[in-house]
Length: 180
Image 1 (spheres, rainbow, N blue to C red):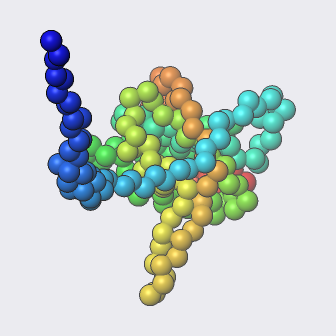
Image 2: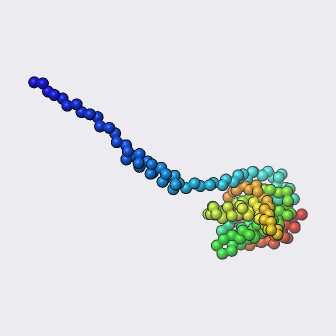
């Protein structure tokens, strides 16, 4: 007995629905994509200082220490210049910027500053203090003038608080004038 075999035809692949999905999905994904802009600041780590470098009395080694309750501006060799207490919940960045202008007036050639932060310092506080130390914006008549203060910033960890450093506070003018 002879058997007859039916020839089966291979079905064609139907991709029309998939192409329609891609045509709708690709523009939707491109339209909802969030493009971010990153700003990068070049920072240097503090260099190790030898004992000979620290003996220079007229050489300013500016340090700004960010504490929970204050900003402490000082010289690594000369000590505390001024302690700026916190106003409300924020650090007084405007007072810091005014002090930086005074210090820059006394040491116009200095470009370096060291920023030391406690471990629980927020990123926003760190950036605000960095911006205040790096430069200032003033208006002179109709013009807006940008002034560079201490653009070369090194970042590090704040030292532990000593007992008398929290209570000592000098006026900015007297401390800066006393350095000459």
